[in-house]
Length: 292
Image 1 (cartoon, rainbow, N blue to C red):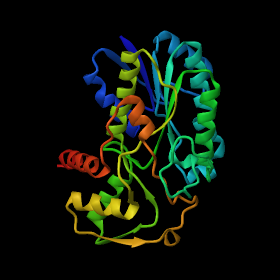
Image 2: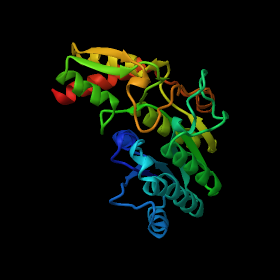
Image 3: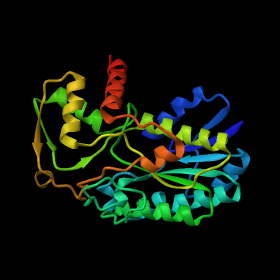
Image 4: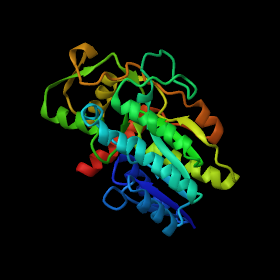
């Protein structure tokens, strides 16, 4: 039985992966979070991998507070770079393979065509720089690894844009949402399915296609269009007004364009990637059932 360690198992993606566990009875999913496994503790990490005979690590643990990271630089790098290095080195020592989650923030958001894995990186924030440093640390660790960059992640679990929009729309008659930032939402349940499919591919084909891959849902939208669809599916009458980014200042500039090219992942693993609108509908139905 393959042992699959899920770090950050209480987050959006980690929770979606754990929800899949019963579908894979021939695998043992091992959930951990900071309270059960400190990834910054090299000795504890190495011991854990050895004791549990871990075959795969799916690293969902991350510091993701983009604005807060600017003032919390040390902790951000400790989690997004140093912990990833520790994980890679421990995995290499114990012959475990790593699937690590990264972000579109490694790019500067100035492109106008979907980002490929080979495009130049140019992070503009502490968060983006720390995530890129984590990618590089993992690749230098010697571990067999797959890095998946994703964007605009949401789920029925945790806090995210979809749940925030639904809550605000229930409380207000009107919302202002930026209309000039373009990207693609990612339903964490779809990403979780893709990750287990990648592991299944590695097991079946007896090969682990290492490297960097991009994953988000298919299609292109803006935060305003995304919010409008969220609120429509929730059945609220709240009006969503489009505003430019200049009218919604944040501590860190968000990428103006963060569409990811998924062709490498689709061709390598023979995966079908769902459209963002269909995935949002599925997630919305789950939220309605959950809240009823």
